Amino acid sequence: MAATALDRAPPAWRNALDAGLARFGDRLRAHGRLIRAVQWAVVAVYAVLVIVPALLPLPGNAQHIWNDLTLAAQFAFWGIWWPFVLVSMVLVGRAWCGVLCPEGTLTEFASRWSRGYAIPRWITWGGWPFVAFAGTTVYGQMTSVYGYPKPVLAVLGGSTLAAVAVGLLYGRNKRVWCRYLCPVNGVFAVLSKLAPLSFQVDRAAWAASPKPLRGAESFNCAPLVPVKAMRGAGSCHMCGRCSGHRGAVRLALRAPNHEIVHVAGDEPSWEQTSLILFGMMALAVGAFQWSSSPWYVDVKQAVATWLVERGTTWPLEHTAPWFVLTDYPEKNDVLTLLDGGLLLAYIAAATLVLGLALSALVALAARALGPFSLRRFHHFAQTLIPVAGCGVFLGLSALTVTFLRGDGIHVPYVAEMRAGLLAGASLWSAWLAWRVAGLSAVGLRRAAATACIAGAAALSVANWVLLFWVW
Ligand code: SF4
Image (cartoon, rainbow, N blue to C red; front, side, top):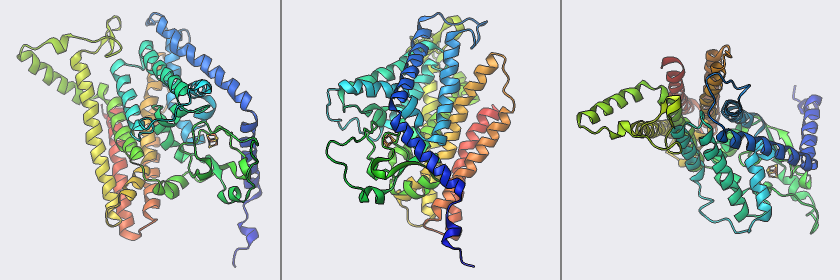
């Protein structure tokens, strides 16, 4: 029997949920003052955690995260904030950016008194998401940002000062920094594509609604999203200020695969492709791996022996100040120039080798569907977002486990959770590839393209297996 219109109507609970979400979006818009109060509270906590530990002596071995501000700040930033903000991107989009981020608050606040210069072309350069992510990740490893407060002040404090400076120069009441230069903007933009919640625009309703009268109250989209044309969640900060605009914008649910399958293919982006393949799935792996890698140790021994045999010992003896390389002799934690050079070489090699291997597999997937097409290549790269995000989360959450273990708190079933997350993320990526391939092929071609992406996911997983289970 043919389905009637009534059969196809959404169930009552779904209607109630949709209405509730739209109301929630409207409340975000209506309670801007409350959100700003929360933002300033976050700024205050952030300032204390970034600045004060850098002024205190390093904690002793008897200190814990619950009785020492420096250790508490370390745990807050690297054990909770970083890994779980990443998770929040996949759950609720960039709500962190629009509602809680202290840097966003400060740059927008500074922008009230901006000189109002037009945004120069160097700021809008598409390479920033990769370069900023790579720069902060590598510098963080060189200075052991996860373990000491001064590098935290340098990295986070420096980034915040830059955000304020950009706010004072460009745009007015905007977040130019967040839109183009924030070191995690690219990672957040790709992960939020998976979020089941987003602000969505009904273009027909927008076009049909009467134009707002001149001077009528509008809204300020601080991260400069072209709201009318918005099709995805990557650049929206979920602040809610546009909710209900022209009766066409509302907070709503969507299928977590929708944006990657149906939108990302129309927006080919080498910026995001390089960030996914060479940044999140390659450089980040090198950054998390090097200190546990037996290959690093072997190469270091070989190079050190080679240098000593030639009477060149200064790279093994000399260090650099803490803001260049880790230098805490009182903690027995010092990187020599040789250590620093090899650290950079290891991360660079991981970036190139893994990035090129992954690119080759993604290119094969695109080729499996027919004549090679760059658009398809970029589209398939997007299908790896789940496994790329999972890897970065696991690398960061390893710090959470280490911090807790250092204080005698054992987290149960860590290995099982890691294995489950890697397996789930890989299957998700393969499923996305199957869906994307299905847009233009069937049968063997579709299966071959999916197998290539599954191979890329397996290559990524193999690196985390080495780190968590083999080394
Ligand atoms: S499109 Fe802009 S104004 Fe609307 S919720 Fe997103 S960030 Fe806020």
